[in-house]
Length: 244
Image (tube, rainbow, N blue to C red; front, side, top):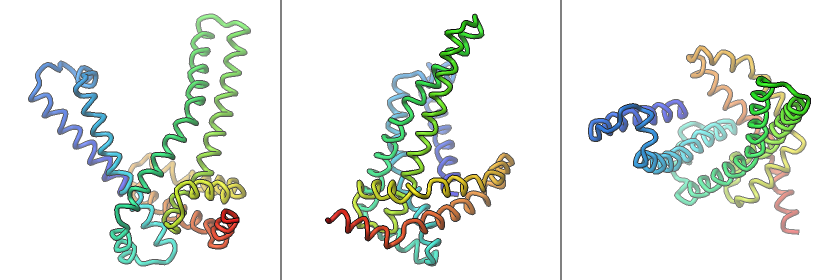
């Protein structure tokens, strides 16, 4: 519900801004001209930054709620605890999310490069098939598949970061990433098969309405699994090894 409400809020807000802009400035003949306008692009960047600063804490609140409920806390107690986290906790969340996005963007660059190579050599083969273009297409396709697997691998290894942050807020930012990588090292296959078990549920999301039921069920299930992986003994062992 948090995701859907936030997306709806952004969509309605952008539509209102678009209509107001057309009322004030009559120079835009079409939506494409509106998007290409320098003024609109500058305001869009500012709004994107504001949306980001608003969305990340709300997404963290949603995760914190599921994590706390998965660990046996009441909903009212969970909401009270979230409201008293403080600005320092939210600043840490935004910083961690920013690091995670930069890390994922860096991982996506070679994947996009290989995907562009695939599309380029497909078009080249359509015009004139040669042995060289066919080999380059197969090579780019192979590299794209490999880079996709590498991206998913490292993304899964970072999956426990928000759970560690909520369950053990005293742990530092870099330690959250390191500990997540260490804990997920032996549980990647288990996590992948757990995700695949929801595949038939996600197919129902095409009907839109099942999203309201499937997503909460999915997030609660993931919260239970990931919380079970962040054991107290594993955290204490990591902190002990770090001190030594």
